Length: 240
Image 1 (cartoon, rainbow, N blue to C red):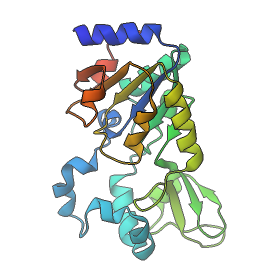
Image 2: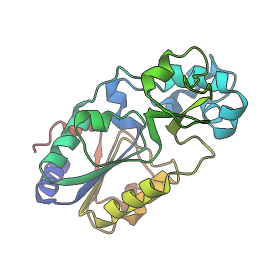
Image 3: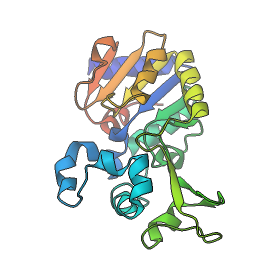
Image 4: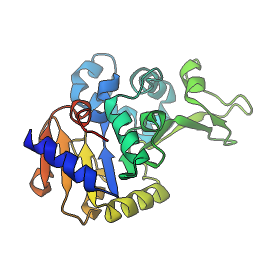
């Protein structure tokens, strides 16, 4: 496969590669991309996912929010797949300087990646909205209904970016700086349709923009190399 050979050569030559990924990176770990199966969820919920995981809905109907969140977004037994592992290996080898992810599952860190910019936060960080005490994801998952702080009784909120909420400024700054300095930008497992996150790849200034995805994206015309398929299967063939 000519494209795979080119990707291998570019990675061999890279010193500042950056990976930008989305939900497709974690589907091979058993975490579904809910956007592709709205119909399934509409059988169990009275509102579309985008409404349920919005800031206003969280405040207005926390019970319904957490019913969806615990069932559809907390996959605490998921394990890193080949894509996560290969990216961590590339970082350890000095070829990859960072991972920019739209995912909230923490699997990049679990695989060994050190520099991870979590644009949409993480399910593993949760805090009391009243006293700011921190809680892990297990605490939230095991709580009956809405998780409450065991110190003050305040409502616990996941440190994830809900619809209507802004991205964390420092995280975005770090991601932009990494992408702007990259000598290769590897984009995978994302439709590049969720903004403002998808717009960050416009900061890339090089000529080695690689897209790995199962379906076309709005950025295909800008790409210097396109590989079609599952990201785990493709990266699994890369030698570090």
